[in-house]
Length: 495
Ligand SMILES: Cc1ncc(COP(=O)(O)O)c(C=O)c1O
Image (cartoon, rainbow, N blue to C red; front, side, top):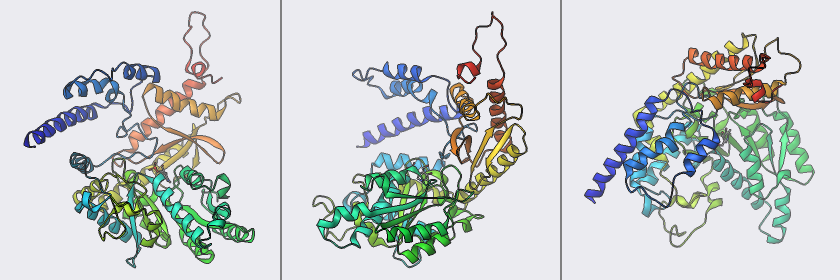
């Protein structure tokens, strides 16, 4: 075993040196290699012929992966909710993976299960679940957290109809989830997975900032009951993916209470405000929710995957329980986390959050997220004051939604297509990675800022890249017969 430990040390050191060397050399968010070129280099690897030597394989990984990875820590990567990660959390990942702890049963996990439990309690304390009855479990991400929460809500609603197996299918067909079109798509997919189908979602309107309207919610809940439907859950979002909108939680809570319906708050993105020194109050009311999704792999600067679903009443988690004789027998009296998880074998994802909190502290995480929100506001101001751009929506968290729309653009240019092309040209060249989305029916560009070390000047540089690309795409190519090179506009079939 001592020999194996030395081998592990050498292997991890080699992998780490190679990776950190790449990290240090990054000078753009991705390489311009095309899909086809990347596919060819990966297909060229003969998986039936092992190289037999880790150093050689690590070297090979340069070409098939790392030279062409998408680097989220590069200042010109501001597309999605990928955060830069704390150094402490990476060290914890190495430890967790080296030990290969699986947390699902006491006899596999012991102190690891207790560490997870302690972090769940830390999170529920931050939420403000104060009566000591709350609980939760780590999950693979917001998608799974939402699915588990909505499964709980569905089971509670079905249980309220009694246990008659003959009426189960009919009751299931009456179940409804209420939310706005701004909820993450995993909510609608959860409805499908839970047997509700697409009609299982009652889609509510939203106000000008994309937030759920509590008065409409009140009315639609009453109508649903009158129609004989079974409203099982209201899904509010604290930080919608595109706009960062936080639904008005205190008012929504009040409506849900009155209608005795489960309130799930998807705080996958906005959950980072739990540790924010300056913006914690934006989550006021979250402590009244029945279940909550928090993604530590977004605003808490943790490596993928690290998320949790939290519940106000621990007993709700037992709707997912399945007791297997070999793993977690019902009467074991042990801490078996498999009892309350949708997964069986499960990584020790809690460790990285633990190590980050112990090294950096919660306030540092919150300050970093606050800084990202400040940067989004500064960036929006730059765009608002710039005649080449239209600010589509003022930032509510750390996203910025805008379009390249210079006044001189001719009527024949499709603005949606133009902005999509800008994104594609920047991505294909590897110069910058920004996102596109649709807000209020308008296609636009999106910056998602999660890197607190970014500067306004760096964001200005990305704006300049967008502008230059936009102008290049809308400038007609010179009509010379000698010049057969297609312009970017022609390449993208813009005109
Ligand atoms: C609001 C919201 N909920 C849920 C999710 C899904 O989270 P995950 O990607 O961790 O499954 C996202 C992802 O961006 C999100 O923004």
